[in-house]
Length: 338
Ligand SMILES: NC(=O)c1ccc[n+]([C@@H]2O[C@H](COP(=O)([O-])OP(=O)(O)OC[C@H]3O[C@@H](n4cnc5c(N)ncnc54)[C@H](OP(=O)(O)O)[C@@H]3O)[C@@H](O)[C@H]2O)c1
Image 1 (cartoon, rainbow, N blue to C red):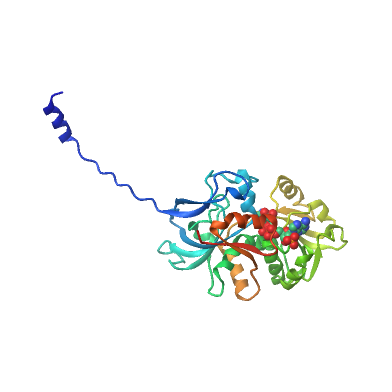
Image 2 (tube, rainbow, N blue to C red):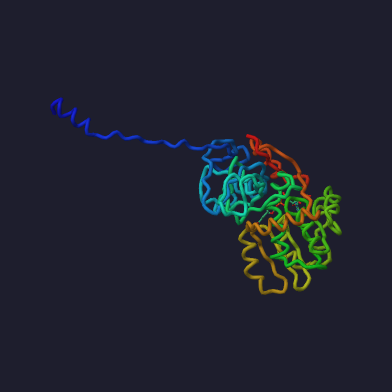
């Protein structure tokens, strides 16, 4: 090809400009494989993009639930459809950064949310979630208290109200009454005017009675399934008893509700539903209406939030260890400091 032809060819070629949009990055707690708490690290990931109907929230606090370490250990692999890296956490308390113009929220609103089971992602600077899982935080509630409520409070409420059909005067036993879920369950059951027996380790007797329990059993000394007493509703938060044993102390028409979503529990749910003493494994569902019910209880002074300990996000591994090893009582909160 002659020199002249080459020049003509170059002159004819239009110049292309490629615009590279800078990625907006944020800090997050991530893990790249299953394992012990040491797999948790701080990383930089893309800020999630808000879809219509969603809120973009600046996370100020979150909290750790047993599901976080169980997923991290690889116990429930079927739930992790989106692979790695994964951001743990379901509980969010923070401020709305962006939302639809006609949303019942506006930028700057303080909100709490219970994130979707499949994705999680609360241990980051920003999250997105549907408006249907978020509720406003009242001025009287601190951000840390708000972060402690969503998953554990919703589990307690749905277990007692929806699965347990709690009603005034019912005799309710809460097995595992001093932990994240149990401490809310005692107070919700009292709000429903039930008679509450709390079961936990002896060191938590005073704590459970202060929350309103009418009586207390130390699981290290008394096996409630052999106590000879009867209950209308047994809420096995700790998942340490079983339907067949609990059945002995269930009154006619009584219900056993467990939080342990294993195959045995699923089978129990299927075969016992027509029986007069039924057993159910519950799986908590994110719901803004339920968060609002919990907020209302808090505002009338009927729901105290107990914080066992507080860590910053970059200490997430220590926070996981604290929950895995067993808290004194209440919830472990994470604040957004990376
Ligand atoms: N299915 C769902 O949707 C769902 C939702 C939330 C939670 N969960 C499950 O519910 C369980 C509890 O969650 P959490 O946040 O409340 O946990 P947590 O804060 O660790 O509390 C555990 C509770 O269990 C008690 N406990 C320990 N050993 C016990 C035993 N042998 N008998 C009776 N009680 C015993 C503890 O009492 P002491 O500290 O006094 O020993 C404490 O009150 C976890 O397994 C979690 O995975 C399931």
